[in-house]
Length: 104
Image 1 (cartoon, helix red, strand yellow):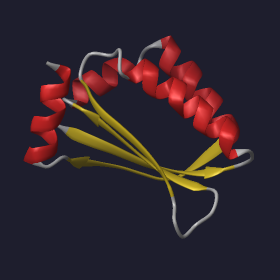
Image 2: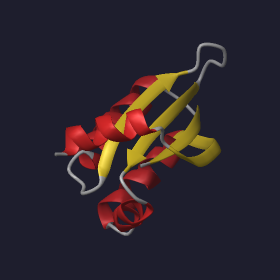
Image 3: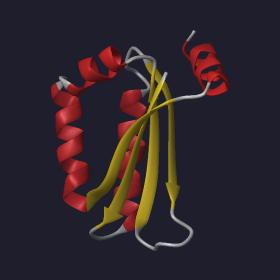
């Protein structure tokens, strides 16, 4: 299980960003290999959000990235926020088991 972690810095209205992210999450939940989604506003940096999305494998995430709908959603998100930091980490065994149970 991989965790894709992105920090977003808003360009405008937080409600617009949160609405776009809610739609994005709903779409991701329909995709093969999806493992989890978490969006948190920063407690110390107003206008920043940390998003963690988990995928069963790099291949499942790459297949998602090739879809037109994903590309449209990312373009919309980048219209309202910049990505200031992005990284990929291996999720812990506990997180992996929980995500696999959700997708079963």
